[in-house]
Image (cartoon, rainbow, N blue to C red; front, side, top):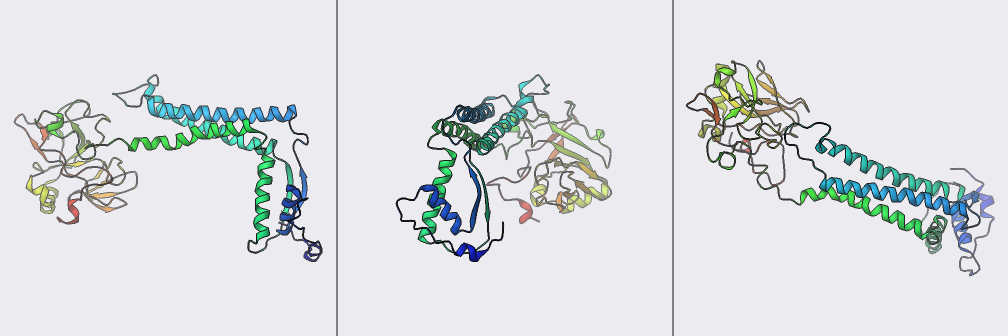
Length: 373
């Protein structure tokens, strides 16, 4: 910005824009003058179009755009076809381990090459110009609109869009895969998730031929009541194939052995649906370990305060009140898994969760704490 002598500027007679002899640049320059913009310096990068130096720079910019398009295409290919599902533990030699780095590498380089291409085009091919402008208010008259059109035409001419078709085509060729890379992740929304949000590994009919699903530790050992001391807790999983893997991400449960007085308080506070199925066994309660905020593991049990904490965003749940949220961003209780002990003395689930575990999702069924307490 710069302050100028307005009286001196007013002495300059306006140019008649209807004069057919005016060149495009003269109209553009007059538009700048009327808008209180002064051209201090204007010089084309290549006064003589079509030189070898200009063509070489065009090829460099085109090469950057082509590289951008190539990496964007590789991103889309990797996103769709690169193996990403884990089956047990994986090492750095397994392709699943490289899925996320490959996506980041390809998309990052695509954006980098496209940005460098645009910057190189601006720095090496556009004219060198210096302008100063005063602030002012004003409407858009007919002359202003005509000037604006000439301004746009001048920008197009300076960029060489008409005489550099190869450059334009390579830019569009790079932009197309980039656009595809932006919308490709939306393809994951096309697949119907089915009942994966409402049915977990504790569902006996779907995963255990109708037989009650046992409760195991991560190493596969079945759990007995004497394995958890009063006031203690352990993380358990459904005793099915891959029950302790990411194949069943909403299945982990926190099995808590409550003290006698705490268990009595909980029984008095149970939601009716949990009372109907006698969800507790003795002084044991099994809460979903998946926080109802964004799905972090809520596993920090404070026995004295009777609270269960989620370390991610500090949500807290009251263990003796259906794990109802009492602090933090979580708004729904942690579902209780109805449990019992079989004839062999091992814990097993009576059924799947009565309400979907985990954070919110579209069309989620209504939850009982809204009207059952």
